Image (tube, rainbow, N blue to C red):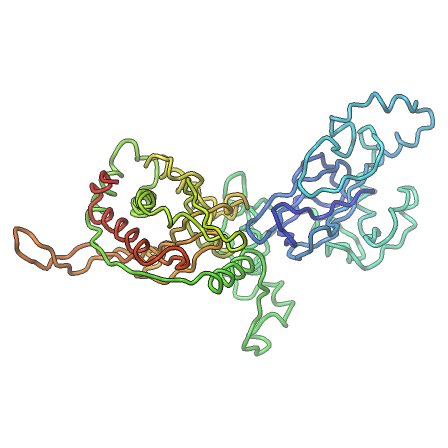
Length: 482
């Protein structure tokens, strides 16, 4: 009976958290059917099954973090398949005529490709219809099946087995009546919504989905958390309730995106010598350009913001200062210049800070760049950013202005040489010169802060790049000079 081991879905992955199971014991699944959602150090990934058959055990509960190579689910052929395999009249030569490229015929998906999977040594078997009553028998056997023992007994012997109190995943198996109803309730909700509900102590089975296809939304979970002063499940665990125990501190495990980002920032801060330069500028003309673009017919169905203009300004300024788009290869003792720009945009999500990047952003038109930035941020907020979308970045923009912050000293992402911090745009008194006279007028003012690797980006290059970006924001028409 094959056990599906947690694969490495990204380069260098060592562990992952099982966020939500998509299947339950007794389900019959096909090859490449999604069985669970896992959270790696970079993103939430849907995990397909390399096997076909009946789910006999879920070996890891939701919310638990396990190492790569740990068995997470046991999948075996259903009873009808076993009966076919036991028929003595089968012709051994007939097995050779089975199309092994058909996952349904092989029962194991030998022709399918999955990163990190271990293929089981098994002969070809033929999928058949399940025998009557097999599903009910398998649900009854759920509580009796111990993941640490040998394969389950024959179905005709199941009524004689006394179920132990231990179950690998579902609490319903501990009840004497073995009522499968609570374990079979599966509420339709996205993985980030499930994680939010788990963190807030909200029982999804008590909510009626109001989202697409009847799914539970984030707003419903938040409303349920605020309207319920004490959640029943949390009340049953007084050790986790600081108010009931008088505890003054709580501890939260460092894992997933926060763990990866924390380690990356430590490596960068203590490896690359950071220098940060600031410039405050008048962005009034940029704000006027944004308003004109919003009313333009080519931009009516995409999001246009000052961030879009800043991103385009950075792409143009990199042409004059290519060192900004390079990185220091310590092992090879070389400076690697990239002839493309994978523009990273730091995005705050419920799972932590992620930095997906737009591939080959320098080759895009302004309209294409607006679409790419919109898709990138929307995917990040939904928690669906894939590891490939966060690798290979060459330059990053972090927009702290959305939080009302003027500026900051950002830390360079590993593998890059510079990062630009975009502060809030606010109306402030500003000195302007018109007709040779100085006047103080209200203008849209913002601050940019550039951190760069001072090993190969000296002050002259960093200053020139920052001045070029500021010049474009002050007068977007100057972009024609680049």
